[in-house]
Length: 121
Image (tube, rainbow, N blue to C red):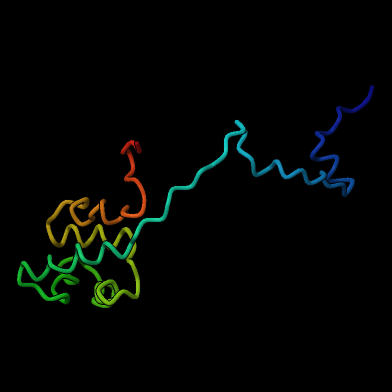
């Protein structure tokens, strides 16, 4: 009686063989092509944030303290050194007691392309 055959991948590994590159490993199994969304204009976020602390009579230092953020994180967004992480914007929304989506002007973010969920005619 013969021992059971090893799976092909194990036989190749043990023999040192490698499968021939086919380029098909990166293709989706259903054959559809992935279309990436357009890049948003992330600089549009800054003007939405700028007036909010001032409207409450807060400095950026106070905004950072209320959001549990480093002062530097808020200042770097203000002076355009960084766009900030999602977690940072979440903390800012809580500090400002505003809905997260109110910090973002979707029309400004998507000014170079159609907004998500809006049919293009």
